[in-house]
Length: 362
Image (cartoon, rainbow, N blue to C red; front, side, top):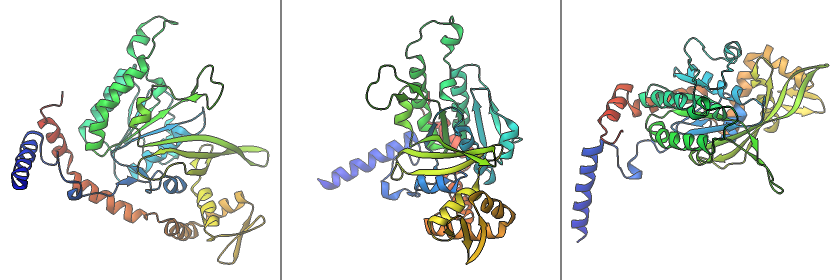
């Protein structure tokens, strides 16, 4: 009886593979890559908070927070990291507010960045779907969900009520996108704004626009908020920013990364490295003085950051020790895993052909 069941199962598996392609069904233990493939976020502190060393490939990430908190900056750092590894990035600028010069300062190769400024929400999401389905994109950023205005709202009169239109649009788009994002190992980052619910007496009145679908489909949700201003003398030069991992399906959630976002420069790698090195006793802090290898390197946090900028060889040495202490891969390890991941997923043509062969595509 057991043999009959096994024969029937084998026949069913062969039929499924014949109809839907090799790899459409398998035993979980047979899967080639059980480890979650990741890409560095551009912030060492955020990589640690995410628990897996970066953003997971083939997953949806939502970044939300108040205005001017650093959401787009965090996303642009992710694009820069992908491009460093030879990947291709796309930016769907629904807000029509991307600053190319600022993006370039963060390390983004703007000559190679694919940019779309859609007129309607439907157009923006269709472009994202086409890019992801091609299998040739490593990361796509949508900025922002709140700015994805449904066509009916744009064509309608000002002040007309369009209840639930945007939520339905996002729900349908994510149903369509989630499968192709997973197959093509693309990272999809959705930036979102916050709104306040009316009449909430207890609990947090804040919510994100675009309905509940994105909250469910997102593997990682990051909340970005400014904590305090950073000053040099009387001049405000940046913000201390808290990035909280509100939801995480690949590691324990609720960890917080604190970073310095400097105006015109983005996330200060020296600042977060200094904090993490002090936490692991790699750099000693006594009062306002900081010491490395029993040698004083500066008084005051900002002075030490400037000293680190002037001594890149010391920064490299400290970075290796910090990465080892937190169990994060080095850049060389990341490059090797990325290469292996690309070899396992196959080339672009193979992925595209496989998708075209699926009978249930449309």
